[in-house]
Amino acid sequence: MDSTIIVILAVLAGLGLGAIGGYFGLRGLTSKSRAEAESEATQVLDEAREAERRILLDAKEEAFKVRSEHEGEVRERRTEIQRTEQRLANREENVDRRASNLEKREKGLTDKEQAAEELREELGLINEKEVLRLEELAEKEGLRLEELAQLSMSEARDELIHRAEEETRHELAVIYRNEEQRAREEADEKARDIISLAIQRLASDVVSEATITNVPLPTDEMKGRIIGREGRNIRAIEKATGVDLIIDDTPEAVTISCFDPIRREVARLAITKLVADGRIHPARIEEIVIKTQQDLDQTIRKMGEQTILDVGVRGINPELVKLLGRLKYRFSYGENVLQHSIEVARLAGMMAGEIGANVKVATAGGLLHDIGKALTHEVDGPHAEIGADVATKNNAPEHVCTTIREHHDDDHSSPESFLVAAADAISAARPGSRRDTVEHYIQRLEALEEVGMAFDGVEKVFAIQAGREIRIMVKPQTIDDVAANKLARDVSKKIEETLAYPGQIKVTVIRESRAVEYAR
Image 1 (cartoon, rainbow, N blue to C red):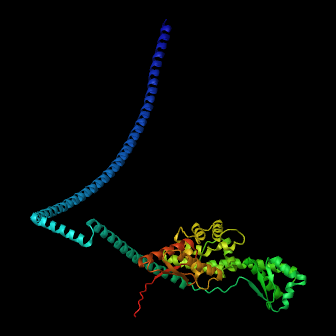
Image 2 (cartoon, rainbow, N blue to C red):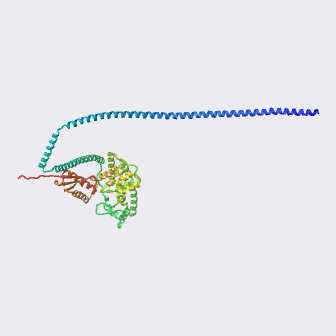
Image 3 (cartoon, rainbow, N blue to C red):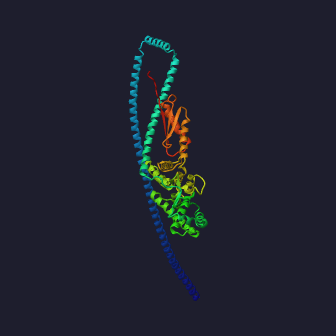
């Protein structure tokens, strides 16, 4: 019994001790968890505070930025308001000034109206009887004038109006003639200065080259060697060069004839080399001709390059340079085309510089304006169109191509085209530049005289100065001085419309009146 109680007590004591130990153990665990929770809470709280601080800083920075922008806008608006106020103040000042001026004008008008009213009242004081008397006298004078002139008032008025119209028309014609003459003199003087300056700056030699080529020989025996046995040498030369070789009685010379100047030059050089070498036979002829063609191609290229350098034109395609060199061997009316092109380029460039046009375009257009003549034996069509097409295909500037195409047209799309056409006419018309046939010369003179004789009142017409001036003798009974001026203008327009000519043609109308009496 006692042992059982002891066991029970021991069990109870053990349970109590276990409960106490469990209590204190649980309490220790709870304290540890609480400490950890407090640490985590503190950390979260610190992070929240840090986030709050960053948010506050960002908010303050954004607020400062917004405030700065707002202040800038406010300043701009304030400045604009001040400007507007200044403009309004200026407008008010102008309005006040205009109002003051209007008041002064109004006062002046009032004073003038008052003076006019006073004058009107003074004029109104004229006696009505005096007015009636004057009207009666005027009527009597009118009737008396009608009796003396044998004309009614309406007829006299019509006659006066007709005379006034005739006098006014005559005075207007005289004024028009004087103004036109003055304008023409000023324009002619200015144009003459420009053209004469360009011509004086460009002094060129008179044409001396011929279109047929003669090859000198050391002796007449060389003619037989050129002909060869049974003519085989001359046939070989003509076949290789494409020319006609003329061997006649001309002492110590043979003549080369060909439509192509390049072929003619190849033949001349080849024959000169064969004569100097002395070995003349078909194989040697073919070899020399091939070598001469190659040398001439190089010479043509160098000639074109040298021309480009002399004139000062840049950016020309090598194909155009080669064609330009070929013009050295081309002649038109006895005038060397390359020399003519150089003249036109320099004249056009000088005149362009004088009037303020594009000097580069005028110079390049003048140099290339006859480039089509290098191909006229190979391509059909006018040389102006051929040259413009070739220049376009070789990437020449559009304005330069236009001057080439228009240098023989009456209408020009640019000042440079007109200058190139004028320079072309000047170069072709200068003394000694070209040789012309007598038939063509006579036809031009007759055409000019026919144009002048086509007008009424013309008695005689004379074309003088190689067709550069036409003098018209008129009937003085039919044409007066004013009509003579109009006739000169009409004839010049008719010549421009119907004839083609280089340069310009002067039209002079001469009216002569003679009074003849005899003393007996």
